[in-house]
Each structure stands twice: as C-alpha cells, then as structure tokens.
Image 1: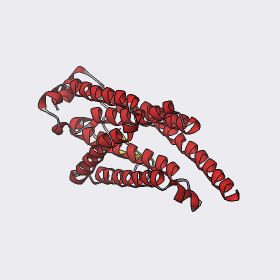
Image 2 (image 1 turned 45 degrees about the vertical axis):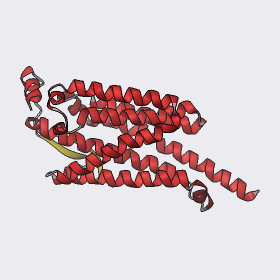
Image 3 (image 1 turned 90 degrees about the horizontal axis):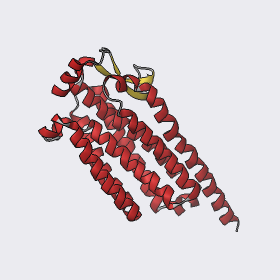
Image 4 (image 1 turned 135 degrees about the horizontal axis):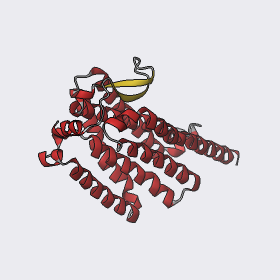
Length: 262
C-alpha cells in the first residue's frame, strides 16, 4: 500500500514537472519574436509562424498531460508535425530542390503543405501512426542538419548544427526510455525523463531551425551580412542563438529581385 502511494506521488510529481517544462514552449517562442524582428523585417515574416506553432505544441502538450485526452494528444503531436513542415518549407537548402521549385519557392511550400495536410488527416483517423509519421519527417531532417553542419565552412554555425543533433539524439533516447521503461524509472524514484525530453527537444529543435535559417540566409542574403549571434552575449556560444545583420538595407524592389536571382 505504501509502495503504491509512493508510486502515485512520484507520478503526480512527474506530471507537475512535465507541465512546468511545457512552459518553455510558451516562453521561448514569444522571446524569439523579438530576437527575429530584423529577420522578419528584412527577409521573411513567415519565420514567426514557426514560433507560433511552437507555442501551439506547448499548449497541446499541457492540455494532453492535464486531461490525457485524444484531442490533447492530436494537438500535441500534429503541432510538432507542422513545426517540422513549416521550418522545412522555409529553410531547406535550395540546392536540394529542383530548379523549378527554387525559382518558385511558393510551389515548394504548397507541396509541403499538401503533404502535411494528408499526414494530419491520417493522424486524426489513425492516431496510433502519429509517432511513426513524426519520425518519418524528423529523422531525414536531423540527418540533413548533420550533413549540412559537417560540410559548413562557418565554424560557429557548424558547431550549432552538430550540437542540435546531439541534443536531439539525447532527447529521443530519453523519450524512448520513458515510453518503454516507465515502471523501472518510477521504481528507482526518477520518473522525470519526459520532462527532460521536453526541455532538451525544445532547445535541440530551435538550434536546428536556427542553424538551417543561418545557412539559408548566408547563401541567399549575403548582401545583408548576416551573422550568427547569441543572446545575452553575442561573443559567447551560450544562450539563445539567432541571426543578426551587419547591413540593414531597406526592402526595395531591387532587393527583392536580387533575392530571387540569388
């Protein structure tokens, strides 16, 4: 009886920690709206959609863990899918795309949206496949980040990309261990892997997104002199990475034509 009560108390405490960790998905993206103000102004406001979708991930996860309902599970899992899709449509390396899609990036965004809508509908009809769908989307994305980081000639950006892959691997390891060995971790008094998964995957995903955005920005908008910096200290690689610009040119028709050509 005492053991069962202790187990219940640990489980309740773990749920509280998980709910607290969900707060990162709510706080960090709002902060990113300010850090990426210049990026949204000079390149694309679509980046803010990614941060808002991350907020939706946090809300869905909080609702799911509070109610354990199917609706909460769907919002949680499908919001992650849309974050991956939005980031891919914005920052996939353009050399990987056919020339027609490079010349018409909106077409690629439409194709990604259609594929994501189909995956979303399948996830609603067969919720059991959501984890599989997420992995199908996530694993190639992480491999892409790793390969780009290894070939990147900017050391600061390369370290960021590789670090995001390590964080992602650790996070997935924690998630699998929590799913398959939950009773064991409760038995040893450490049922907190899921909350750790939330914390690590938040920063791992954001660092991967920032790395890909940095590579894309340097390649296509070099005239703005983009640079990878960290908040609160720009020179120390500890904190929240984001993209700043040394040259802030006004958005003109000429700049838009230059961006399309390059």
